[in-house]
Image (cartoon, rainbow, N blue to C red; front, side):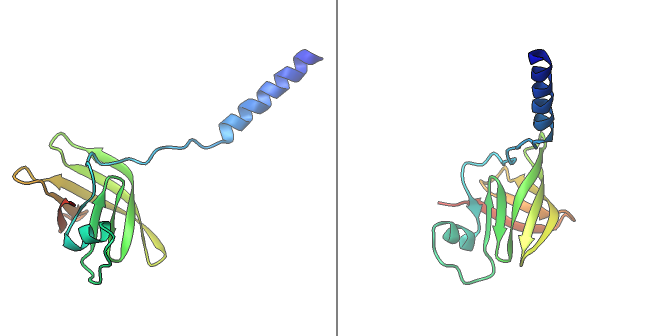
Length: 127
């Protein structure tokens, strides 16, 4: 009797383990701190920014004047560039977007491109 009970307990435990979703850590860019334009770095420093040029790139996502994006997948290349798939939220709506993030060899800046190849922002490390 005890032997059969422990088998069912083991089976129930296995069923619970199968139904619990795994928690994955969000992918992150290999950057030491936030990068931004002038308004973005001011925002990171706790200042109130009134313009609509705010842009901040963080290891786990980006924030712009009208919304924020969380990286859900990063695909780095040998050149140092990366393709980022992000879940973005703006005005209560969600959207999936892709960006290309390219380090500039002649400076410490990073360029962020939309999926159509258009440059969105060039950002530098925030002080």
